Image (cartoon, rainbow over the protein chains, first blue to last red):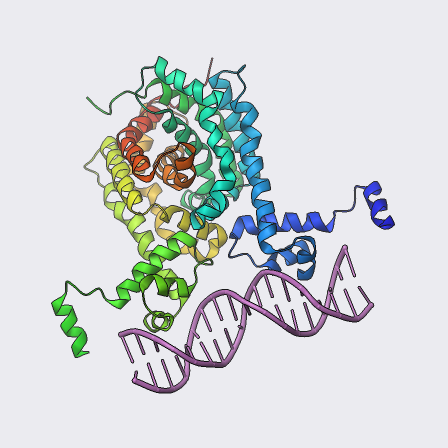
Length: 218
Length: 218
DNA sequence: GTCTATAAAGTGATAGAC
DNA sequence: GTCTATCACTTTATAGAC
């Protein structure tokens, strides 16, 4: 106990065992998913023993929930302040959202498929715990989209534009493992394309909003 | 052997055990993924015994490969004729592709995440077997996008538009389990929205192609 | 706190009766 | 072809020494 206090005061060089396990679990769970992950894989990745994992976290399930909800929070809660800022216009919000998620996804490209495949495999386990997502339709952002559509006399539901925005930001990361070989790009080249999209996606979304009642050909 | 011949001639009412297992395996694998699927789950879903599954298919792995590559073929090979038809213009191809995939995904909404999460968990096992996807950049479709961009003096790579098209078609199905509660829609209402998009997505892609060099604000 | 050893349960696959 | 029973192995979790 005395020794532990000391290391806390010394700070810097020591990474606690607890944190090593969390970091390892995040890496392995996020890449392989819950079922394909063995607790032994996490222990090995953390450079510790299997028993120690159960000493710090009671079970595989508990550790999974910790990782899942910590990541989900960073992905969902971090944008609440952007979405509900009444002092910024729609254009600004679009640019902030695209930029924020592009940077986040370059760091954590595996998270979207991880979350979505866990929901698909086991909706009842997760969907209730992500209750926070239901707040989006009540946001200032959503109201601003509605207003813009009304201004442009569009009959389309605002939901389409939320889906389009998410699609254009997230899906390119989701299909990265397929697109890279398809277009013969390595990881840095692909990420450079994603950064290009930071500028383009808000432009594209604006095109949607301003021309959404145009018929295909007539 | 004689009995088997007979049932083949009678045809109609009999669904072969082999096919029952394939159908069950497809349902369970596609929803849960390879690792979370128990061979017992497949047997139960098929209404047969576990031993019978190994009698028809040598192993879980063999059955998985069958399902995966049968589904992947339907998703990738089925569009080759559309992509390489020199007699249709870009607009027609866009409409055909969107319509084709929308219908397919309404029937099999779980396939995209299944494929993508298996690739994420185990890229080396799958990516080489999907070599066919590399043919897209050599297609007539791709050349027509390039031509259209050149005509409109865009500096953006054609790849962005392929990604955008895939994103707008596929991602809404991928996030369906999250979007339905978010916007309080049930399955039929959500699918109706997807059908609306059949008309809209080609319009949106055309907006991209014709305005892709516009700067955000200046 | 950290380890080795092992219990307890799950899971893919097969043997053998019918 | 189809079943029941069971083997062989993996995997989560814990007991107990240090």
